[in-house]
Structures are given as C-alpha cells and as structure tokens.
Image (tube, rainbow over all chains, first blue to last red; front, side, top):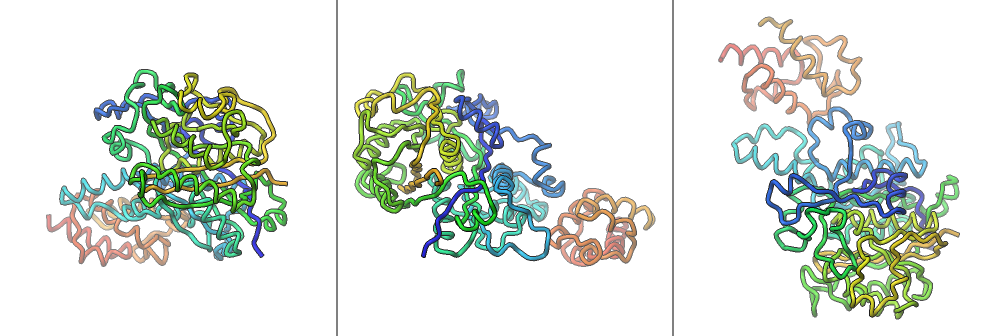
Length: 423
Length: 84
C-alpha cells in the first residue's frame, strides 16, 4: 500500500521575488530579476549580467541568530534556509520547541556547491599561513550537506536529513527523492528543494565555457532568451526553492492547504553515450525519462496540460522541444503549453529545478500559465514543431490539471516530475 | 591590567556566543563556558580568536585547551601579556 503524496507548503528566494507573494506577482507579470552585475564587470567576465535574489540584513536576521550571521559567508545557505523555513511555515507546521526531534519529518535539500565564498576566505587564510584563524564555522558552511544540516537543526528534523547533488537536475531530483520516501512510508513529511550559491566563483567556470550570453551587458532584462531565435547563452543566477511534501493522510489530518499532488516522476541518465556527453544530453535518455515519468504517474501523454521546461536559452532549446514532441507524441497545436522561468530569472543552476517547480505548482494552484518573456522572435526550428500559441507570451488564466516539469544537468542526468491539481 | 579589567573586556567577547544572556549576569572567575553559559563547544576556538584580537596576544594550542572557564582564561591572558 503506497501513500499518495501532496504538496502543503512552498518557499522561494528568487532573483525576481523573495517570498511567495512577490514571486507570484513577478511570475504572472513576467518581471525580470536580471541585472547588470558590477562585480562581474570588474572581474572581466564576458557575461556581466546575473540574477541575484535581494535579501536584506533585516530579512536575514529573521532566520539566523546574530552569532550565525557573524561568520556566515554562504549565499547558498542564506537562500536555502529562508526558502526552507518559509515553506515549513507556509505548511502551517510548528517549529518544535521541546527536546524531542520530529521523527516523522526530514529533508532532502540539494546544492551544487556550499559556501563557495567561505571556501575562498578559508583558502586565502590557509595559504597565508593563518590556518588557526578559520574559526569553527568553515566546515559547516562548506560541507556539501551544509544546507540540510542548517535546516535540520532549525526545524528539529528527526527523519532523514541529507543533501543531493546532480548539477541542474538537483532541485527536481530532490522532490522525487522526498516523494519516494513518503510514498513508501518512511516519513510523513519531507522538506525538499535546492539552493545555489551565487557570485563570480560559482559562475566563472560557466563564463569560461562560453555558455553564458555576452551580448546583453547593456540590456540585462533582455539577456535571458529561451526559445528565441536570438538566444545566445544562459544568464547565471542563484536562489533557492522549497516544497513541503506530505502524505495525503497526514495533510488531511492536519487540515493543511494542499497546493497539488506529486503524481510520480522519473530520474535517469544518458550514460554519456551516443550524442550524450558530460555537458550535452542524450536525447533517447531524455525521452525515456519523460515517458517513464508519465507511466509512473499513471497518465497518458494527452493528459499533460502544460510543460515547464529546462530551456536555458542556448542552442539546446530546440533539441529539448524535439525531445518533448517525440516523448509525448504531440506537436503543433496539439502540443501542451510550454514555458521557461529562466526567461525572467536566468539559470539558477542547482536551484533551478526547485524554483521552477514552485512556479509550476503555483500555476496549478492558482490556475494560470505564466508568460515567457524575450521570445517575441521565436526560434524557427521550434516553430516547425510547436504552434506559437502554445508558447504564451502573455499570462493565460486557465484551470490546469497536469503540469510536467523536467530538468537536465551536466553529467547527462535527467529528472521529470508530474504535478497534478489535487482532487 | 588587573583581573577585574580583564573580565570587563572578556565579557562582551563571551556574550556573543551565549544564547541566554541572563546567564551572563553572575559572570565570575568560576564561570564555566560550557556548563554554566551553555556555549557550544565548537565556539571555544572562536572565543580564543576574539581574545587574541582584543588583547593583541597569540595563544598556543596547549594554553587554548585550558581556557574552559573565566578564571583559567584570565590566567592565560595575564601570562601571555607578561611574556610580551
């Protein structure tokens, strides 16, 4: 007997909105969170625009003690803790004050790196023969599981507390790992999601690979152009997204608001075989991942109302669209609606899958499809596959039943999650 | 510098690492950082670093291990100040 799994809480720290109300507003209106970044300019990056969430010292002080803030130098932990605790609170869950851990609740909270600025600070001290001045906080901020360790402590979690990492698939993967744990009865509630450090030391490698756009330093908001004929690379970004997954039984017992149901999904890899490489997806694996996600959810391709794609604004966008067409057996006007949040926030890397999943779930809950921006000049190859009305550039208010969300990452890894309106 | 003066300069450093500030009211030489002030043991190294900065001294590993209460910390600070 498997548990049904529903979503009862959301939290988000995105470049275009911190907190659900601001993010939802930005989402519906296609507000961009991408700005010129003076630090990237100073450091001679090709791409000098980026998406950074705006977190004030006052806001941070609501989530961290004065002592923690004294040495905190990890944007990933900052964003992740805010999103994670917001999701917990949004679900109406209490923060346990007693001595007993909450044995029924855990977290799978992903990250690509942790505390990269803290790591830099430590490296400089060590090379300067000042090892003893690292203090006590270098390890907990730079260990990969830093974010889940911080959240586990703040929420008193007593079930599994771990961090997953699978490049840009991380966020979607965390949802499916949490889903499976609840489905098979090992936890009642799981906080899942992911976070990404921001700044030059995370983004530098991508800039050097020439996968970021260098053509929009003067017009940042036009820079991220998924599905556009003039897409010229992604815009680096950061942030965190968080979801509370819970067994349906537990959610009903608590009288919790149910945003949506996680109906199923699939995680796989292309094995870097065929055209798949460390950095390029193997299309047969992507298509298999989508098909298996539908099968796992027990739905047919015809039932998918909308897709939230990975769609980063590189030459790979058309390949992704072809994969969706092949996997679903749908094209032209028959293709589901499709959108990419990256047009408004950039590519939040390890946080992308979770922030975009929060957006997908908000669409189901409130009944809308958020607009794509910056694709007024649609890519010609994409137009041969999908009718342009399926790529909305204005918000559409409509009841949705099924949204498919997929993320793909370096290492040729894929994840696809099927969200359903709860009924 | 007498011991009272050292305590007065030590108190704000220690205070940073104490969650329940009421515990600081009766701070005296017998006060134990972990048992009485409930300071996280990992933070003891941070206190030592702050002390070094405040008093302009360097505290070796052996001395550091002894700095578990206020009195012992004052002893070490006094010794290091004299050595300078």
